[in-house]
Length: 526
Image (cartoon, rainbow, N blue to C red; front, side, top):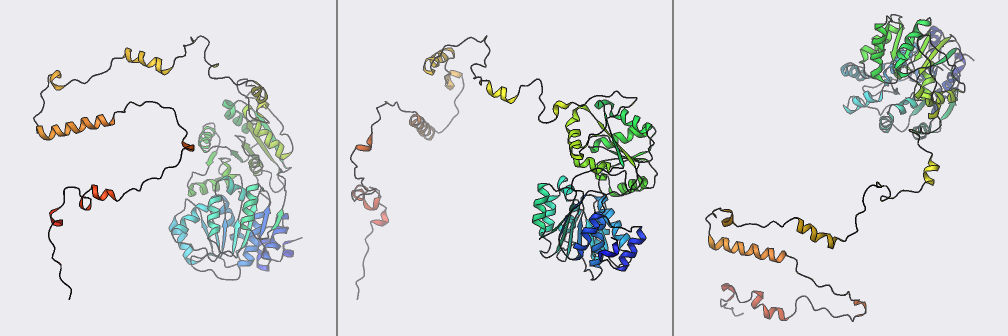
């Protein structure tokens, strides 16, 4: 089957032919007709299978009719990284050169002003990373009510990078009636939940359901001490005929250090990671693509989507903690039918990660040694469960052992103190520590300040009386009586009729105000 059998227009077929493609890949063959029919699509395909063209080609065909409005894009493509977003934009430029479609790229590290100018003119295709898109949306520079097609690419990568809350927020402001294309390399339970939330009756397309490595890639594993990893990498590069290579690290802070180490040893190496500015990242990739440098020390930001042909080697300086990342990393080599070599440098403590990778790909990775570094063995005691440290006994043996009480845990040399009640120990404490008494000013030799004797005397008397009132009165303990069987007594009302007589006129007692004692003359009625 050729591209002409998929229902694409002659202008689009001419652009595909100019790009040098004649036969669609399996994901393209299955996805393009479904997208042209207007259905939601959930595609599961590994990197390098051509899924980018699987949604860009039908989108160009659909968007060829119509016109975009200012600040209201007609389609939206979300990508996890700047490099993937830039590569998708290159695909649109390559396949849409015979169509008059406006495109905008919203990624970090680029001026807001330039991006706002493109949005104001109106765009048919908006390619963005979630963070930068929300920045423009929060500023009120973009409206998403006219989006007809939504593409969520590399959904599993979005999940790993923590973009799912941003994705949910973006989808919440999009129109309910739209076409959604959902692409992912894996189908984890979290990805399944997202697809059920975003898609309506989707067509599921799966290509290479099980993660597998290309047969054109020769894989090897080197196990060395953690302090000898740099020497092992240097030995591998010098022993191999390396034309160009990716060198992957797990942590960003190790990328710059390793790049400087390689440069000091005479290698042409550059660094690439997510903390770099966009112009620096673009320049670094351009130098590597143009063969100006041979080694690219990078993080997993370069593990997916980067289509660089004729890469001879891939070196995993660190074993990836996620087995899926291993497949994506070594997929940078051995592309388009060419052969490639992938080397992984592991330490004995990384046995569980190596075991997870071998379980995923279904084959063991052959072990090799280097001439300059002594080889070691993987510590398999950490595989299959939690590692036991310090000869700790198993859980069953721990549960069988009776729990020690707090008294039993005390050292045997401690003398046993006689048990005494608080009533017995309190007098001894009082005798040991004499009570403090407060001396008067005359005893301390101080002179009392002058004051109003009458007022202060009353205040002192009130304070003394208050202290006496606060003192607890001696109580005599009586046996508790059961009052449930006693007859109920009628409670007197709160105020009886006799209260008024006791309190005098109007409740004032003997002090009746003078205005109440005046004689009042009443006028006779007519």
